Image 1 (spheres, one colour):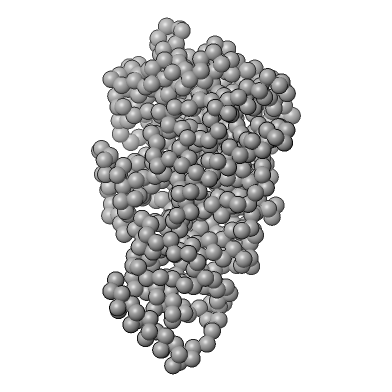
Image 2: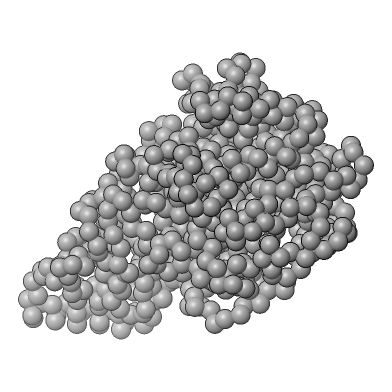
Length: 618
């Protein structure tokens, strides 16, 4: 921009203001000074499309394609068209992604319920609500996607699929031994099934039920069909995961890690019509991989597995938490889950290391490189379940070996290299610790948050999460860790950072879109995800959290990726990050089961907090 022209424009604007003696007006007309400063190029205001709670942190982001500055913004009541709040734009965060200038618009102090929009210069935000109920029903809504992902019997399609699974590989039994491992959830838009993501998802659902039971309803039966059975739907869904995990750990010395492999990737089809042949005839059994603790891969490629503890720890934590929950509901089930938790944990002790997923035709797999976090959470669950000090000591020792989940503060990571994306173990152990140990565990969370905040505080979106595959899953996990830290410590220092990560998922991002299919119903959300349900039959995948934006460098090097439609977000793509609501973009627009399960915990925490009036204020 020509600096001389800018100065002249500002002087003229000041003269006009003085000559006309413009007084403050409550009408929703942009301040002329704001226009003069901010109207040099197109600008947008990004808001959380779900809305904001009266007592919660309320921040939007203004981004402009020019170098024009912003001084003020205003909040307008939609009903009256009156300005109800004026605020200073605050710090200039400068360039970020597609924007030349960006500001955080903080209106936290305004808490009157209603429907509003923000205006800053010529930019006007979409309308949004402020209300205590803006998150109501969102966690239950996301459960729709989990039910749709069910294998065995799929309640959405009201039909069965993959009922012949599976035949064993790499186990102590003869290869191709047929065992019953039907059930569970499909991992994403393909139909592979991983114990690592399923156990983590099961844990999140169980924890959501334990921590926020009042937000969930009972509108579905155990099989997922509509109806009531006296059990919260989230617990029914967790039980579906538990039933499959039981099949994957059928004996004390048997633990299976994976069902099917990348031979699955043979075009789009519904799960109830899956003709893929894994060597046992089209539509026949699929391979189920034994957790041997050694590298696996039936085709050209193999993983780098070194042990069993990463998967055994996840089984332990899911079964251990289930045993606690069912102790007051079904003692026989509780006893069974206790036995399974203990036997899985022993397998982890016997074979420390990581059990990565198995590739076949392509060199892609979940490259998990950490395992002490899984054993820490498993030991913490056993300590809560049994009260035995040996489990506490083991959990604490594991926690010292990985204080911070390694992706936090990093610019990149391999696919699922550090998984789960946050460690529930510190939280679960801290709840049962003395003051000194609790403070130490809280400190581990704080250290990870600080690493992310060091990057986040430099941009208007408070974005410190790397744009790697499944960046939305990392964002969700980081918001959960921030919440857990705040619950343990009472420290509100990072409350705005926590909210910013939540807001990102629902529209406070450069693209201005929600990353959750159909949520909110009136918003800009994915409509063309990488999913057979939507592509073939236009079935909605309600509640599914899509992968999220990736670095431009990642996107530009992907193979076999083709966009099928004109890019609706073209003007917001950048070298920093890209996101496409396009079936062809499997890197940014494919929903995942485990990410959605984590989101259910996060949404439940938000709904519960708003009900209790405990949302943090800035």
